[in-house]
Amino acid sequence: MLNVENVIVRFGKTSVLDGVSIEVARGEVVCLLGPSGSGKSTLLRVVAGVDRLSGGRVVIDGVEVSGHGTFVEPENRRVGMVFQDYALFPHLTVAANVAFGIGHDRRTVAHLLDQLELQELAGSYPHQLSGGESQRVALARAMAPRPRILLMDEPFSSLDSRLRDDVRRHMLDFVRESQTTTVIVTHDPDEAMRIGDRIALLDAGRLVQFGPPEELYFRPSTLPAARFFSEVIALPGTCREGCIETPLGRFRTPSFGAGTQAIACIRPQHLLIASRPTCIKARVLSSEFCGESRRVLVKIEGLETPVALNTSLLNANGNGIIKPGITIHLEIDADKVPVIASRQRDKELVHAQQSST
Image 1 (cartoon, rainbow, N blue to C red):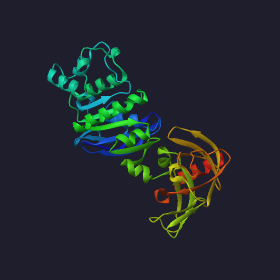
Image 2: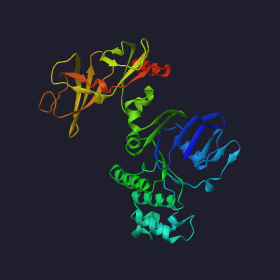
Image 3: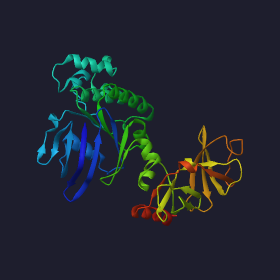
Image 4: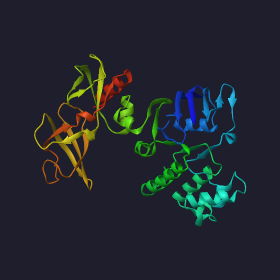
């Protein structure tokens, strides 16, 4: 349904997107993920036709809409857009907001209000709505013209955490039932993993990695990609006999040749408190009660930087108390630790981490 091919966007001398290419299948939900300034909102606006390309092209349902001298106006692209602030018309009722752009098609308006449980609010005005209700009205308005693609820019960021899950689940059920191709911008990796069929991770205007959530989490292509989803202990090493040796043990690297420089990306959840002595000793610096778990900050022998662990109250001590100052032993779920080939940028990040400590 959507092909973004080698898209470049420059504003003056500033490069915002640099050769980004993604494809989105019909009915698929894709999340554009990345830190502020990564170019994800610009990419969304390029697809909508709000921003123009400096290079590359955009193809929607087999028709080129931007690139090579072609530019289809936003209103002719059959693309729906939900903005971060919803952008509802304050002087129009809910029903009139939904009907805007489709004339007097009362049947479509009534159907959408029913689907999104907004019937009782049809005569209300935007200032009378809650955040979740406003989000659903904005979604209904974007869906009313039957768009080929739905674009959503940080649609849940203004909702409180308790409401966000319910509204997000409702929206996702709706777009999947309607089989609407959807592209959602978010800066929240947890949100992207929960709702996206695939994730396009952007950084500094470039595509870092594009694939299913499980692939980005378990098989990151770069150290920044690994770090975007959680804290990472980056341990460099050289591949020998299918493994790299690190201060925390050996990790398998079956796809790397001997002599390859690599980095083991150990997430805190890969470290477990052992019930018996192991070769990995750690001194507890602090211990905080968090309800069903305890956050423990430890200093591991052989590592400069302290590591924060979230551990079950059922630990090696058996009583749920891990006091500062005691020594504990750790073990690693080594099979889950991703190992990436070390690139120059990754080496610089590891060096910066070591220098900062």
